[in-house]
Each structure stands twice: as C-alpha cells, then as structure tokens.
Length: 188
Image (cartoon, helix red, strand yellow):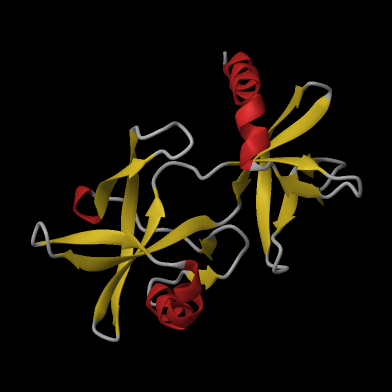
C-alpha cells in the first residue's frame, strides 16, 4: 500500500509471475469467502494486447490472431517504438503487457469487437471490445497493438508471506459463484 499523505493509503499491490516480472495493480475490492480474503485487482497501467493478421485459406479472409507468448520478446522493441510515438511507454509486465501514459480517446474508427470462445464456460462466445492504438509490420506480417475497452481484472489472495498471488483457474471455478455474489452485494 502506498502512503498518499495525511495517513491515507491508496491500496495497491504488485503481482509477480514465475519469471520475476511484476504487475502493479490497484485493489478494487477485498472480499471474504470461506474465511479467506480475496482481492479484486486491476492493473494500474493500461493492459496491451498484440494481434497479428493471418490468412485463412478456407474462407479467403484475414483473421486476427493472438500473438504467441514466445513471439512477444521479438516484437516488443518494435511495439514499444510505435507506442512511444503516441507518448505511451510499453512495459513487459507479468500476466499482460501494459502501457503508461494518456491513451487517445476511443472512436468508432479505431475500435473493434472480437468474438472469443470462453474455455471455462464451455464453447459460448464472449464479445470483447478493443481500441487499436497502433499497427506495425515485422518481417512482412502486420501486427495490431490494442487495449481492451473493459477493465482487465484479476482475483488474487495473499500467500503465507503476505504477498498477493493470482488465484488458480481451478480455485476460481470453485469459488466463482460466491465471489460474484459478494461483488453484487457490494455494488448494490
């Protein structure tokens, strides 16, 4: 937690992944379920996604695809440079790329919706909206740098050392309904 003066604290924590990268997050809510405290976290900086355009030979259309994690390190310097042109600083943070700086105002021309399969809920499609921040080419492939329009949220709990750890997908599925009930109670 950061001291912001006069004894007031702005709740923030840092998530760390297995590679040692960190992700500063604000604590949006603290919820207790089954005598365990869970934290609803949101990255402090804007989450960033990089997509690539690939040809689908069956439909003869170009498809927007997620960039593989293994390709991020190769693309990172170029993505960082194109975002710097907009006074945004790209970071290689845990769980997601992030960018600091003031995002441009979203317009209809730079936003799009992706239909994503929700693996956890079966095969239902979920719509996710993104704002395009930049495009670039690398080795003849086109890439699009975007930020989601909806907040990116994580659930975490503190480990024995008091450090926040991401809740595993299995544990999240076990407590999902209880967490959602608590969130809706707080929001009413």
